[in-house]
Length: 484
Image (cartoon, rainbow, N blue to C red; front, side, top):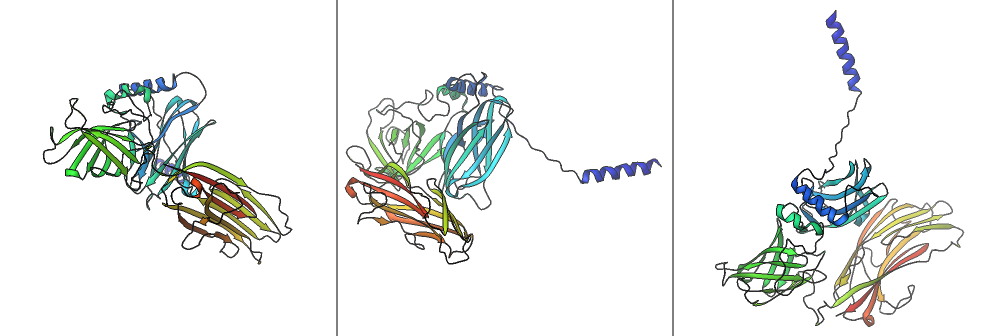
C-alpha cells in the first residue's frame, strides 16, 4: 500500500514539474577594494572623480571598449576592432546607483540596426560593468558601431569601428602592479603619465586618439607597428630593422635594431617618433646607442594610403571639412491627391508620400557621411541604403529620390554652378530612386563615387550636398576648405 502511495506522489511530482520552466540569469558587479590592485584603481578613480562612496546623482564613468578584462579591469582601450575579433567588450564604472537597472544597447550604425540590448541590475552605490558581444557565425560586418549605456536618467555612449586589419588599441597598463598607482591622475586617459618615459629628443608628449598601429612608408623603408601586450613592436625593411617601445601620448619612445648584430653600438639605439595631429604621419629622431649620446638623424613616415607630402607649414595639403549645414523646405502640400511627411535626421532620412486612394511610398534612406579630409582628386566613396514600404495600385508614380553632388560652396542651396558634378553608382547612376515601380518592401544598396576637386578648386572651398526628395526636400551641406 505504501509503495502505491509513493508511486502516485512521484507521478504527481513529475506532472507538476513537466509544466514548469526554470529561468536563471546572473550578473557580477565589480566590487572595488577587495585586493591591493583594486584599491589602487579606486584611488585612481577617486583622484579623478571624487569620493566614490559619497552620495550624489547617478553617473556613468570611463565608458570604453577593450579587447579583454582581467578581474573586471580593462587591459587596453580599443579604437578599432579587427573583423577577426571573437569578442567585443564594453566596460564602464557606475556610481550612485541603488540596485537600479542599467541598459547596454549595441548598434550597427551603418544600417542603424540595434543588435542586442543587455539589461542588468546594479549593486548598491558603485561598481563596474563588462558586457560582451560575441562574433556572429557570418562574421562582423565592417563599419561603425555604437554602445549606449543608460539607466535612471543618465546615458553615455562610445563609438568604435570594425576594420579589415589589426585591432587598434591603446594599452592602459592597469594590470602592471607598480604602474597602476603612478597612473592614478590619468586613469582612462591616453595622455602623459609619470609611469611612462618622457621624450628626450625635443618632443613634447600630448594626448591623442590616434595610434601608431598599422602600416607606414618611411625614409627607412616600409614599416609595420602592432600591439604586443603593453608594448608596441615594429618592423621596417632597411637592414631587416626592428622597433620596440611604449607610447606616451602621441610619442613612441623605444629602441631600433638592425642586422647583422642587432646590438649597440653600431646596430641599435634609441628612437622617438611623434604622430601628427591627424595621426597620418610622424616625424622622429634616432641615435646610435643611448647614454645621452647625440641624436644622429631624422625619421619621417606616412600612414599607407595617405598623402606623402606636407607643406612648409607642416599641414598635409588637402580638403578639410569645416562646416555642416542642414536645410529643409517641408511645406504644406498644395496637391489634392497626396500628402507627405518627412522625418529629417542627418544621413538617416524617412519620407512618406500617400495618395488619396491609399497609394504609399515610405522610404528610409541611410547614408554614410563623408570623411573629414580628402586629398586633391582623391576618390570619395559613400554607401547608401534605401529601405521601402511601397504600395501603389494605380499609376500615381509616387517616388523617393536622393543624390549627392559636388559644387562651389558659396552658391544658393537650391542652385548649382556649371562646374557641379554628381557622385554616381554603377547600377543606379547619380539619382538613387525608389518608388511605385519597385517591388513592395524592396531594399536597395548603392556605392556612390566621384573624385574630390583638384587642388584649390572652386576658389578654395567646395561642398558635398546630400539631397533627399519625396514631396518635400531635405539637404545637408558638407563644406570643405583647401589648406596647405
